[in-house]
Image (cartoon, each protein chain N blue to C red):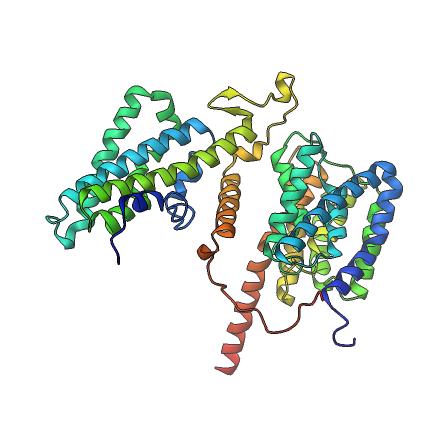
Length: 260
Length: 220
């Protein structure tokens, strides 16, 4: 690629295009309900981006659309508009904008927002994802890999862990569970900014996500599937820097052993 | 250093040099007891009392404390005061003292108390020491009360146990944000408070840990 073409906004744009199949399958299943939720979320996200642009000269990013899509699809139904606005604002500001905008954040803002709503209102019902979203997520992952936005190692790690879980008899491929696992993985864990950045770290993060899903599926009774997938995504997201650090340590150790 | 006036000594630790938000001292108790306003207030009063009394005593005998064992002497004085406060609370406010559990006893090891004794009361006469201790105690109390108010108001819809926002269970509109009663919310609130203060008083902002590379932003 020509140097300079791959700016932050190009990446955000391609990521958004890659996620379109997922967005379309979800909107065709949810209809107006989903469109309204998406629009409301978009308004909140871009209001904050505008505020940070005016106050701290941080350029707004197209990635806000991805954040809004993820929150609209996966957030539990908050009791009342105030709660929803609070949760989305918290995720967008604390998860992303205080660090200097998209590209500098440590956690995915949507993960933060959904976790905030989930922990803040434990009684709120979690959404049920349409089964077609599975295919949308697979298409999105395919396009993401083709454009180098999603790490194939991350996917392979998760696939291995989930495959082993399926062999062990866990209902990973169940039509009511698979969409939540795959959509959460696509939207939150595969985010190029906040997933692991080293090759070994990516393998480890994928394995960790799949492993956590398997653990929660077998031990956590009474959890909604999206809740379970989100918890796995949150922990995998939080450990990404640690996994990178370990991968770098291993690299240094190997290098020292070889070169003395 | 020019001699600072008593007014200056009293008012700077309230916000400008607040022990909690600037020096991040004493946040263990600040986070633990702020789930409701009454515990936060009790803790504030207990800490301020201990701080003022210990500063007075240490300042009184400052010329007689051998330097080599000064920490032991200081801790001994603080611990004795804490025990008295703890007994008073258990005698007259048994309910709240149960809810504060170990945190009153832990005032002994609160960095804030020892920090003021070590850095101020040890070098200054009684009156400035007491004023400094009161200022720091009130600065700590200010943060505790702010965070306690927010957490109780949004976590339960009450203040001092009196319903303020009518919750959905009582037929009102407010849904309690139960995250506010968990420890992370205190970190979030304290972080936001520190952010707000440092955005206003920009001289408090810490220098950058890394200098960004000298090139154009990717987003341009």
